[in-house]
Length: 191
Length: 294
Ligand code: SF4
Image (cartoon, rainbow over all chains, first blue to last red; front, side):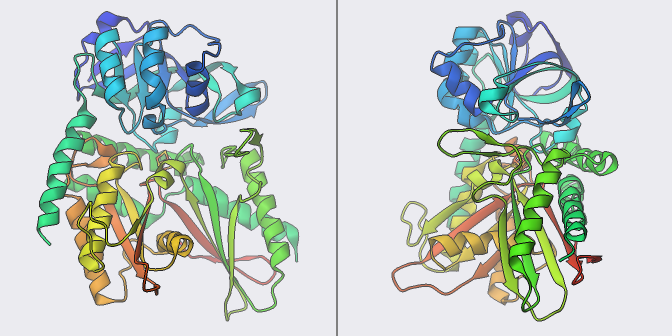
């Protein structure tokens, strides 16, 4: 297994290849539907994402005394961010996007041109992911968007993912989509 | 109605549904693990899913952060006070949210403002029917959003996939739905399929299939055969766990048939992810726990 530690520089990211298992450590920022739309519309970004990581995730968090307890924090479907992702990667210098289910053609291109990588975490494995969260930093957009849509600053250690899109233009998801389309036609013929 | 009793036990139903993966699903995942190649992506996904299930159960944590839409199915005795039942169910949902068994998961559809308790118009979903017994059956499914989004409805004939109004057409719809979903519904999941009905009852019936255990087979012989055929075929697509490639795309498929009008032939396919949260309990007339259904 490869390791990927913050800061997520272009040089580190460009060494990852589709299919690699990666153990990631460092600060990551959750962002899902509302935050992507907000950034796409030119809204203010309260953090610096240069050489940073976005995590498609709406965590389940409760208040405990003065701090937050993350009870489950697995990935959410990334494809819903597809209309906005490429623009955000280019504009803000994002190097790592973590999510589930893969992303489309424009994100694949942006990863290749700007030097970014898309990582698949295991969907549904909410408490395994939460166990990787060492601390919770600031939370943004809490009032407007609610806890599930807010931008959480999470410091993680050893979050294991697989490289779904690398910076050389390869996409595991595009490959699976194409090969499964061919098999679907075969299965249709076996009536 | 002894409100405190009911609320306490319904809260426990929610807690257990959110944290304790049913044994039939866990057994299905173990079987899937054996069929994936060692050290493949599929193997890694299923092993992580099993680790996650053990950790959630052991530490009383939600299996998945998306606790979805809570769908309650009640069967109550004749003359039972269903208004009171709805009220205690909402109370239990609100308490489960405060305790971190459910995520604050409901938003105003227009303004986007959060409802903090998961109690809002349309949430939780509560279905009540009358039964012959003196006890109450309470079943709950937490239906995650990712898996809900990949649900789909076909109106046959469908030229694109060459599906006519017969069981072969149904098979094509099911496989097409699994193909379109790829990893987005958190494969390997379970399909609930309804043949017939209208656009609304088709979805309702397809989701009710998730109340059946994985080992349950359709009583109709042809439908039973189709259930296993769909699972077998889907696993040849090469989509695999989380759509990362591999052997297991589905853990099961459950089919039911309704009547239909001459103009319509709907095939409705609902999807439930591997984080298949379904539990049920039998409650006495005073709201005391009699036994767990699953
Ligand atoms: S599809 Fe299911 S397992 Fe996946 S994130 Fe949604 S609720 Fe969780």
